[in-house]
Image 1 (cartoon, rainbow over the protein chains, first blue to last red):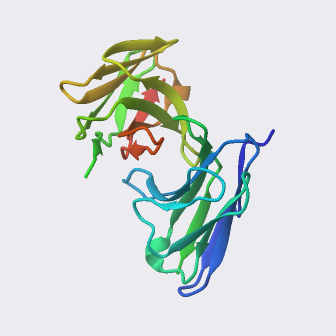
Image 2 (cartoon, each protein chain N blue to C red):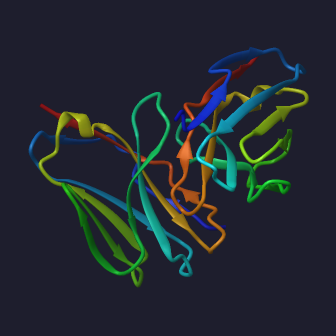
Length: 110
Length: 111
C-alpha cells in the first residue's frame, strides 16, 4: 500500500521547456489536489479534482494544466516553464477533510 | 480573501516543556480546523482536527478553538526533540473539502 506517489522527485528545467508531473493514489479516494509550496508561504492550491472526470481551478492555476486520467491518477503539466514556477509541488488525495500527501517534487526553472 | 495567520517562528522550547502554537483566521464562517505537521523536506501530515469551541485532547496534543475570537491553538505537552517541525494551521471555509493553509510556525525543541 504505497499511498500517494509522485514522479519525479527532482527536476531542473530551462525557461520555456514543458513537463508533466505524475501523481497516483491507491486509497480509492475520490478527490485529488495539486499544491505548490514556496518558502514563507502556505500551501497554495493549483488545481483540484473532486471526482473522476472533473477538474477545477484553485488559487494559482495560471501556467498549469491538469488531467484526471482515471480515479487513481492526476497529472500536472507545465506547458512553458517560467522561473516563477520554481517551487515544491505536492499532490494529495482525500475522501473527506484529511488529505494524504505524496513526497513532493522539487522543481527548479532556470 | 480568506486568510490564516501564524507566527513564522522559530519557536524554541526546552525538552519536557509545553509548546504553544497559535493561529488566527479571517473567515468567520469557517467550521473545520486542522493542525498538520511538516518535517523538513517532507510532506504535511494531519495531527489534529477540531470542529467545535473548546479543547480537544489526543495524547500529548491539545487543540483549542475559539470561534468568537477567531483563533485556534495547539498545545504540545512534554515536548520531545522529535516534535521539532513546522506546524501548519489549516481551515476549511466550506463543505467542499478545500483547505486554506497558514504558512506555518517552525518549532524547535532543545534537549
